[in-house]
Amino acid sequence: MKFLVLIILISCFSNGYTQEEEGLDLFLAANSEIEIQHFLNFVQELDSSNQCGLALHGTALAMSASFGYNPITKLNRFSQGKKLIESGISQSSFNPCPHFCRLAVQSQSPGFLDYDEHIESDAVIVTEALSNGWLLDQRDTRKGLIEFMINETQISAGLKAKLEKL
Image (cartoon, rainbow, N blue to C red; front, top):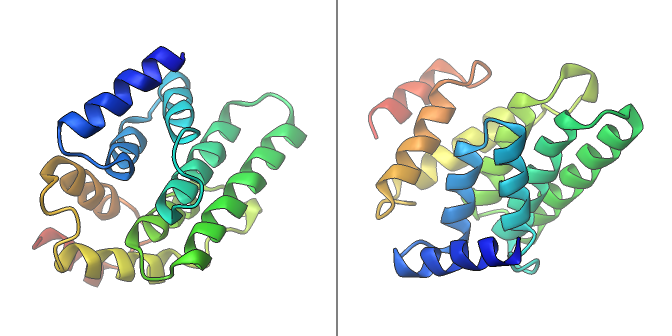
């Protein structure tokens, strides 16, 4: 497994991606238990002092909770992920990456978890960052984030219209 992580890290630096951009790409591709585990393995190696790395790790943990069998374990994983995401945001409220992570987790979380209060405000921050050139040099990542947000039902039509113009 460490060999696989090493290969991913090498590919990050050889193609101009930052580790955070690679983590965002892995998030966008994580549609199965195996892919989510791959995403989790990758983000566990990221710098925990980095807000985006912390939030990506939290996102992967929260996503991995959906594949557990024990409800208590699932809730604990989700809660750990939520804490990491919120910690990433509190370290730098201006970095759009942790806001996108929170938006992604909140928009996919079941209602009974009551974790959906920042969807629109996070969408505004991420949309502004994208409008100002965030991820402009990583077109596929940028396109994936925009598509993800446009497809979210809890994001306002006005923001979706702005995103469609990007």
